[in-house]
Image (cartoon, rainbow, N blue to C red):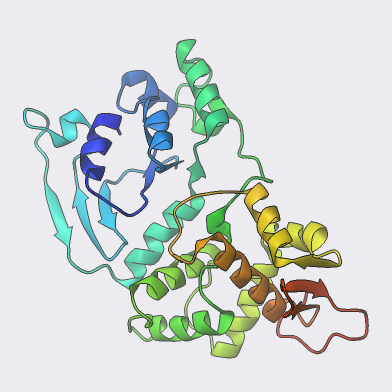
Length: 296
């Protein structure tokens, strides 16, 4: 992918953009991908992700429709005088399609200043190392303690996600409108829950996977120990999660409130929200917790 072509594709778009590309080191050397793509994206608030092994070209707004193309976002792939290419417009993205693309985003690595710096140093030195190194071989493994705002749950409640799940596995639209649907597909991909579960089994599995998420484990260890106000939780989340495009549209305070409510509902009765001013979430005293849906 080349920065100039991305600029033309993004021209006039109002919503935040996420780009998932290979950014393989050999492509950076050949010019098929550009190191300048990262500062271009950073200056425009575009989230740039890298995913080894990606070999498709798709362009979508909201994952509701898409253009699938043989042409990459390069001069040769998009502009007159370049390669012979073809494209097809997908008028309706199925649930399977949306979960597939959400899964690609979930598995991809966010490119940041450190990744760009190491890749630039490697390219300036003429490459080296394995013949076809992946990005991790050049920039190091991702930091397991680095989180994204997309690690937060997007759906308003676990129950709402269970209802959307039931509709999706029945071949229906998730319901609730485009934004709620986008949140549901985001969460189902994040927690990687497959089809075929009853509502009770779905909520039990969701609770296990939510509590096992590294961000949630850290919040339970550091944040709610034993209590945190919502402003404290907001500051904590902002300090640990890089800001990337997410579908909720409610803003960071609203996303943190939903996160705390998920923790209360799925925390096995271990947590409760105190509806004060400001509200807070606290760990219940031993012996005071009731039987919750999911254990910690």
